[in-house]
Image (cartoon, rainbow, N blue to C red; front, side, top):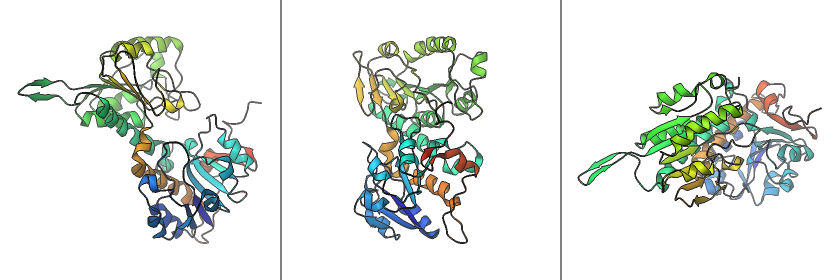
Length: 378
């Protein structure tokens, strides 16, 4: 039984799917672990750290994945690498199932059983496997730190003999895991924090962190959450009312952090160019949804843009700048997901596809895309 990973090839990606810690745990399950040389370097994990726990170091991706039974990645490997594992092998990764890359279809064509971690059900048993939460938590933290670094003043109020420096005003848009961590971090840095979200349950969470909630609280707002805890798409009428309220609020802010994403859809546009133009020179906008089209008009993935009025828009891929911590949490999530697939008595790899979590995340098997949310309509 071979568990393997190759170096991530996406631009700016610093994470790795197997760390020395989880390599040791997989070995204890009876697996042989194989790592492409240099796969962990950008996360601060040298090859020797893997060798010290008994992992094999392969010279390239083909050698690392060749004949592997279980492949773990952060993102879907390229098409050539997908052909390297054994036919019928299992791939576990963040496959961006609704993205333009067609990763589930590519996995099906390669004859792999592919599991997309984005489809993990929100149940108690799956909390230790929840890669979206673990990575979003770090992204929210880093967004607040990046905002403080880009902002031309300090976050906390400071009283000095030369006068008082007022506290920065930070507005967080989208109060999921990333948003809550951004609120908490900005508050710890001394900022005056407000936040908004379409889900009514978030109001209490925002206020529990010492921030003020901003929203149009009508009947539609009170029903704006799915059974799975995600935000629903709001009506145009509600969006107009909320936009009017938010536009006036944004103009008074020093920092805006946006985190809003809706599964299977482009990121909703929360901050228009007109709203950015109304902000003060030196104001900072951090867009964590930029890879899905962005919440802020004018945001560019991986770039910092200074607008004509002097506002600064940061198209952040914040979590990749925390490669070591992000890789450690991500690798533990994957181990927690894969560990039940191993028979403890025989040390064989026996995934039960009818088990709730595996059934919910399986996107490709037997040469076809099998997930109901990815199949074309009849």
